[in-house]
Amino acid sequence: MSKPVVAIVGRPNVGKSSLFNVLAGEQIAIVKDTPGVTRDRIYADCSWLDRNFTLIDTGGIEPDSHDMMLTYMREQAEIAIETADVIIFLTDVRMGLADADYKVADILRRSKKPVVLAVNKVDSFAKFQNDVYEFYNLAMGDPVPVSASSRLGLGDLLEAVTAHFPPAAEAEDAEDTRPHIAIIGKPNVGKSSIINRLLGENRVIVSDVAGTTRDAIDTVVVRNGEEYVFIDTAGLRRKSKIKEDIERYSIIRTVTAVERADIVVLVIDASEGVAEQDAKIAGIAHERGKGIIVAVNKWDLVEKTDKTMKEFTEKIKGTLSFMPYAEYLFISAETGQRLPKLFELIDQVRDSQTLRVRTGVLNEIITEATVLQQPPSDKGHRLKIYYTTQVAVKPPTFVFFVNDTELMHFSYERYLENKIRESFGFKGTRIRFFVRERSGKEEG
Image 1 (tube, one colour):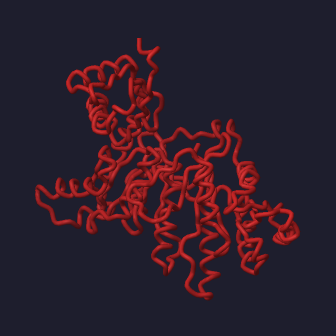
Image 2 (tube, rainbow, N blue to C red; image 1 turned 60 degrees about the vertical axis):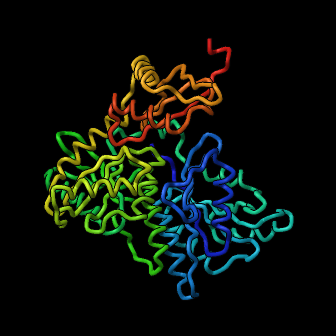
Image 3 (tube, rainbow, N blue to C red; image 1 turned 180 degrees about the horizontal axis):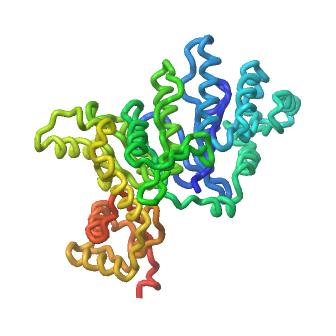
């Protein structure tokens, strides 16, 4: 079961980004920057008590003129409605109720999504008590007073938000074991065409079913008696005139699709090559440890020599250097070239994602690796690896117990990863390492 998605929505200047930054900075253990992302964060992995969720900031670029205000707010609210499981509707106690708040409330009310009304900038409840009560006029339930700047009321807010999450036991029961594949990439690279071609080639009964946790449409393809659920992130419903908004909304959709997927197919337009935005989109999947296949579409339009494919692959790998494990496939949705091989790769990556290595065999490989290349040392103190074990799948995760974590250099970690890959494959999947120090008493 994927993590719930929570979006912060509201008119401009109510403090959406401030609230996002406080929740992201205070409520989560680790926030990692996505490779390739240079702008402010749009999403963060958060946890409150025992519940994990993805938080989305729809703040973004504010409109330049008053004429664009309503259009902007409507688009912002609609993207949250489409992608989120729970919506935080943020208002401003100091500015009071505005017509724009009523308009956002109407949009959210029609969505039928759970909404938590939060009133920001309440630094003192005693001082602003009557002003907070005014927000009952929105008919959106009990307003939760908060102050992002003073970090007040955040616990009450998160309590109200997580109350809308499904119970943990129910989430486990509802887990869908079918492989879920997200087709991601920049707009107009052929994502929908790929899915349409897959449907036509397989000639099967297909059902379009609403996504279990949001309004995205999933497509089920049956091949050799097995169901594959494709999550299509194609296109935006409306094109904003603001380029940054297009990119922001595209990334928000990608985050929610990747969150639900086991394997991600990153589609690149062969006629355009790989770009910075491709790295941003790929980085989202990499950070979440998903299986990754890079599909270079429109390959039939490229003039080729016997070296073209190799040169193109090397160029992509240079841009996507943070995920050297990715699998590559050169296809054409238009002609169907190599598309059947996509299912073969999906099956191989899925097997790699769920592969478990027996502890005894794993330690034999690590021991052999340390003999071939001595572990690093510092001032006469050499790294010792006592024991290694696999603790998780999706992605495969390994824990190394060592004498000194400081001695486990990145380069040696990469060497050990390569040795593990040589022995077990792990095609198209990231491998995660955790290094733990054992006390001197345990060493004997």
